[in-house]
Amino acid sequence: MEEYKEIEARGGRRPFTFDRVVRLIITLGMVVAAMWLINRLSGVLLPFLVAWLMAYLLEPFVQRNRRMLRLKGRIVAISITLIEALLLFTLLGVVFLPSIFDELHQVAAMVKNYASSAADVRFIPAGVHDFLREHIDFNHISDQMTRQDFKSIFEYLWRMITGGVSMVLSLLNWFLVILYLVFIMLDYEKLLDGFRHMVPPRYRSRVFAVADDVKRSMNHYFRGQSLVALCVGVLFSIGFLIIGMPLAVVLGMFIGLLNMVPYLQLISIIPTTILCLVCSIQGDVAFWTIWWECMAVYIVVQAIQDLFLTPKIMGKAMGLNPAIILLSLSVWGSLLGFIGLIIALPLTTLVLAYYNRYIIHRNR
Image (cartoon, rainbow, N blue to C red; front, side):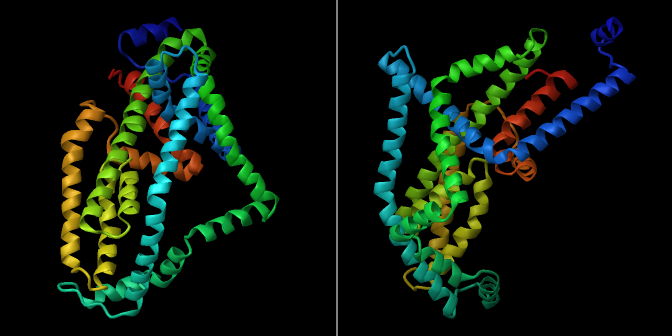
């Protein structure tokens, strides 16, 4: 053991002895077993992880309420935060849901008209329309959009409740998210301290150093990028409303959600173009007119994001490359399903932080 320490002190690599190989195999086996266990218990763990993520995102607001109201405990601050969140989502639903449902019916009529009428758009060959009709079932999309009213939603929820024991149990599992959220928020700081004390004292310095790297990256991408994505979604919604784009709020917030991975919102140009094409068949506006207006919204919002939002909210610190984020979401999502999507970023940042600190000996 002393020889290994001397080798590490001189910057050399430890030899692969039989003992070290056995330890590596055992560690690898434990990792594989943990992944199998997580996948096996995904139905039970998913509500807990969703609640933990929500508590993590709401924690800054809890601390803000504590500072503003000068509260010593957390119960009042948590209650105020949850009430604020509930009021916000209720207000958004009251303001936007009726208009969204109306627009869904209007766009459904446009989609059905596009599926049955002959399209003639300048500079776009007729083969493009034939390709879209062949590979996209516009009639099915139209039927689904017209069904999204309050009556059908309540009927669907009622069928879920009365449809069987499995449906009820599934509903109860998601009701646990609320309970988990409250309990996690109440003891958020104690839970973090408990995790720290679970680490053996001899490893605490190394583990805490890696944990600090993970915390900075998590704050950078979960909280910072969430705020950027929300602002981008609002800006896109406002821009689409100004140019008279159908489904402006839905499309804008969808683009904002895609922005959780930086620059991934660019793939939304495809559905935006198709929506512009469908709208142009009604004859109210030319395709190229509304399409170039949409592109102007993309350019303006992207400029605001790059020049103002990202520097002010995210700062100058560089985090994970967007390609790495997308790859980690794909890999962990395919391995562990929806749970993998939730824990993809923490696991990726943990692996990279460990690699930088202990493999290539580079501190951030």
